[in-house]
Image (cartoon, rainbow, N blue to C red; front, side, top):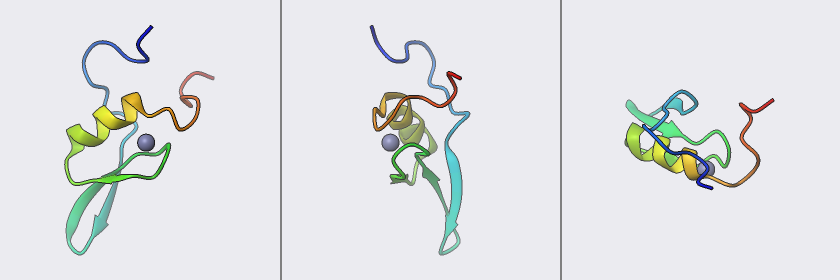
Length: 55
Ligand SMILES: [Zn+2]
């Protein structure tokens, strides 16, 4: 079963500013993206650890 099906959920992507630019950080593995959608897509599929919103 897919981890996430449906529209990309952007709620958990963290925003960080570096050198005046906004980056989006996966809160599970810490990977940085310059595009919010890329970050959200990655994070929705990131299996670094169990999703924290299921608690
Ligand atoms: Zn990740």
